[in-house]
Length: 165
Image 1 (cartoon, rainbow, N blue to C red):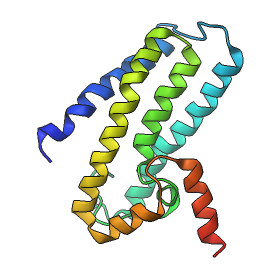
Image 2 (tube, rainbow, N blue to C red):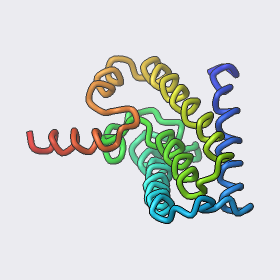
Image 3 (cartoon, rainbow, N blue to C red):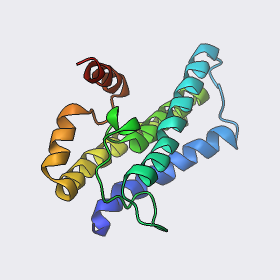
Image 4 (tube, helix red, strand yellow):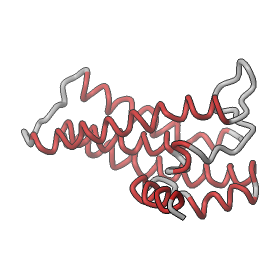
């Protein structure tokens, strides 16, 4: 991969970190006073934590990662566990985190930042699919047909259907 492939993450990553800091360190919190919206945001935040940290364990265990290497250096396509629901759980976690921060904060500034973060993250996901096709070939193309990119509700439904067939 070359530097051009990292440009989007150089934009969305710091913005997501700033969103997080503004909400939890600088108190951009429930500004509109909509408690139900804030609580929904917390639920989404919990889901994002699961999608964010789950892959670290799964990829390290099932991805053929060599001793001492980072979990991202997989040698094997992992299609089980969380990867049977979503192709990109960590990117999805980023999208959900940004959305959660919007709902928790109810701040115009956080909304504007999220309107930049979320689409850039999604474009990064599309690029990641292209990279994975290059890395894993037809096996990944088949996986793409079975498991959604980011729609974890559809992913859960499909996983349940696969279990019952």
